[in-house]
Image 1 (cartoon, rainbow, N blue to C red):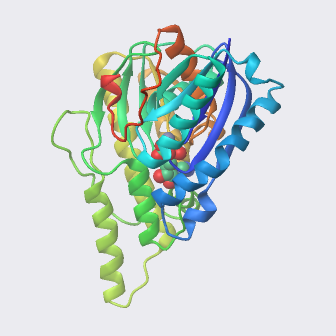
Image 2: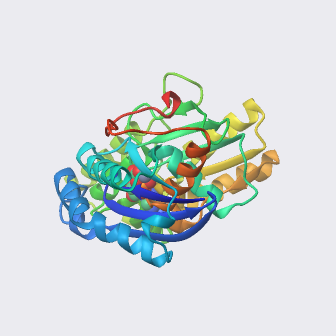
Length: 336
Ligand code: KG4
Ligand code: ZN
């Protein structure tokens, strides 16, 4: 069964074709990063306009790379939530039009479920149930993946998402957007123990976490140094910050796995590309005897393949949308 997956929730216009869920026949990602870099972050209106300009070409390229026409496609999956509303609306409207004109079923896909599904493409043996750390620009969750389509969020950030914390810290250090990958790179030249940063405790569930205090500590350290006319060592600060985020995310995930008895753990989302987080999860899983599944770097960020893959499982579970499908900016994974 072939599914066309369409993704436009943030600054990547993407389309891909999956075969029986786990095999990807083509995957096209048109990124807008260079344009948003000028503004230090994603400008929602620009993102929507670029999606509008690019989406037809991206979908046509995905079809042609897979040697398909719309006649070969069995269903159309599209990200409808969560994300930037104007950006989501472009993909949703396009997918609706395509589904109505071709008579193909339309499948609404939750973006975070898509990130989790990226692991199925790379790891044929991975099957629910398992525990997944999801860390992206807009979300940081610890999720019990009960089945391919049923999720329970057991821990979440109380304030900033991990990616947001990376991007804001990078900006304070004068690094360009998107900051996560820059911090990752610069950290390799720095001492992670050079700056002592707080591990803020979050009120709420024992598996919740918080990043805003950490971000504020970096900002204060940088500003204090500036006021004294001193220079901070950017590589040391990047490494210290990255180590603290990795401590928080990996320790909380391992604690949750231990407490709930999970022996299979996965990671997903743009921040799961981070080298320190990956190695801390590896260490933690080794310690508790759990098997770890990490998405390849090419599938950590936003892409259409993960939507085409999750679309397959959503299709099997009977999920369908009609012409009234709308985009939703905020929608918990628990409620789908
Ligand atoms: O999942 P994603 O592509 O988009 C959202 O759904 O938000 O995640 C983007 C986020 C950005 O904040 C970016 O800085 C972060 O992922 N990111 C990283 C790395 N690569 C991307 N953060 C830390 N280390 C990285 N290597
Ligand atoms: Zn994403």
